[in-house]
Image (cartoon, rainbow, N blue to C red; front, side, top):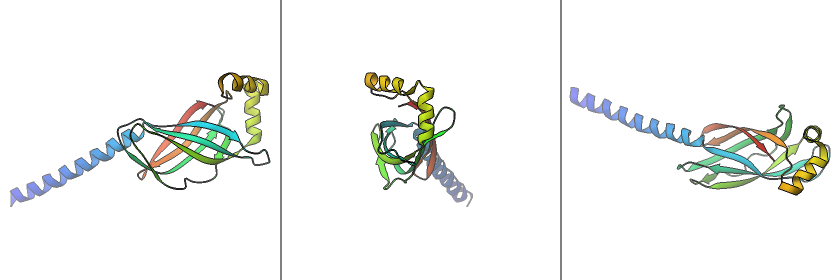
Length: 162
């Protein structure tokens, strides 16, 4: 009877440790997801301008992930809100190992904060010169939010220059 109890206990511990290791590895690999901005275009200027910002989500790991939700807001380095995501991800998708995926999402742009942050980097002439020479506006932003990967929320805090 002792052998059966020991064998049952050993089997339960073994199965639990294997499952735990898989979850741990998945979470560790999920932290290798990187988010960036591919395109940044303002569609219209009104009191609440709406923009389609194309985000890129890169999987730099050997695991396949099921992305069920993403929530990202763009902030200045001072912490002012520049762009707020207004619509959730329409459909979940699978992100294969070493793959990039593009996500066209709609954002509400805070025009006053965008203008003040453009002034802080040198004004419109500096932005136009940066755009003509490098194809980027030269605006440093911080993307903050989360990506929900297989019922686990992975925080996003990516400083980038658009």
